[in-house]
Image (cartoon, rainbow, N blue to C red; front, side, top):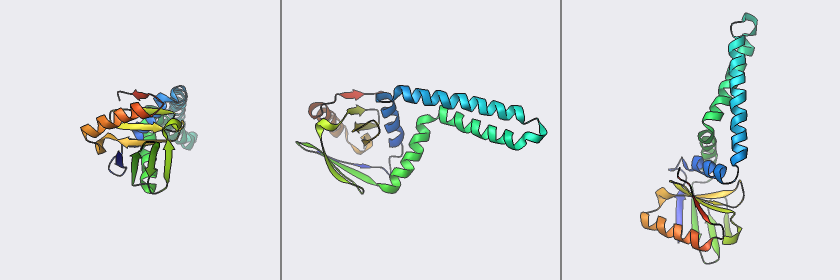
Length: 174
């Protein structure tokens, strides 16, 4: 089975990738980061608002406000923020990726690499509403967009992932 995913037309893939990885591997770390961003966002915004009425501290107040708003945006829109910047970097380097599922492993062909990974090296295999994610490590993985598959191909890929990979297929409803 051969599948080609086009990253240029699927901008939301990286957001889904970060969300799946966060839920699967780094849930506590992501929660700690979001708490950190929230606390420092509130503190920065509050400090900026408190210093703004004081005439001599306007530059410090603006820095506090900008830092606070930045951290609050990172807290509230965490996955969208990561997905936005990751998608911009990925599209510059890779336009599309071709996955070929053979008897011994997965062959990945794109502009940066040609490699074959045996099925047993994948730490996790995940499915969300729009993607399949194949994780090699906690940070490195591959994304297959469901938009690039027909309903029959999606069912066939799901069956292949459950049959050949040692890691169980985990389904997320987001």
